[in-house]
Image 1 (cartoon, rainbow over the protein chains, first blue to last red):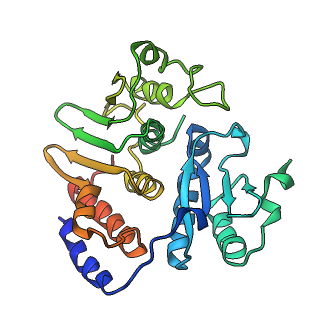
Image 2 (tube, chains in turn cyan, red; image 1 turned 45 degrees about the vertical axis):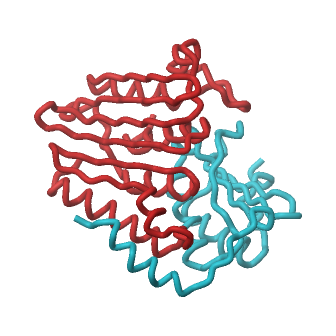
Length: 122
Length: 185
């Protein structure tokens, strides 16, 4: 059986790296709806794709968090990107593949993927 | 309705998060002898009054602001009962809540347990400051995953990294496979 003690090797490696704690106020928040409507619509793989994307690309100053139902259930899974000083962007009908595109084009590239936003859906 | 019990569990855990729990304990226990699959979600969140507790199983009761339905608990109860099982929810205001769903293991009306690893990973990723304990047992053989152990090992060193996440994922998948010994639940 795998044991958590094996993590000591990873920890020892990290001891050599100095990491700055991210200030919440400077952080871009990627908010995934995880209420019953979101989960039923497929939010779990979307959360995974966003989290994997952020970590694999080593994107700093970004936090993936969850929220409850915002009352737009038919548009779930919903992902909101809240960047400090910028207007909130609401992506709707998300999938793991679209999440990967949003990471690449919006989070890294700085360009909102307008075809996936709520404005385009309404 | 969901397609897997693991999605119901993920849904109920959201309630624990909304209740601002600092510790959420998730238990899945499978017993072939008792023909049962029991899922328990226990939290130390704000809890409910007796009056709220009687209302929570009503799909038209919710504490959410933008909605007129609260389906998480009713769906879980329905899923358990459809399999011939049972459902219990207990709570104490200021102390926490415990949800227990018992499914009849062999029932054709029981949804598969599904991907518990992805559910646990989702809970950990989106709630970095909450302690999560997940215990999985099949007929007395089991393992426990406890984020407090990880915090102890890492101390001040950040542990929300890709490498640690990948480790946790293989820890959960490998140990689950070992316990299951080829069975599919």
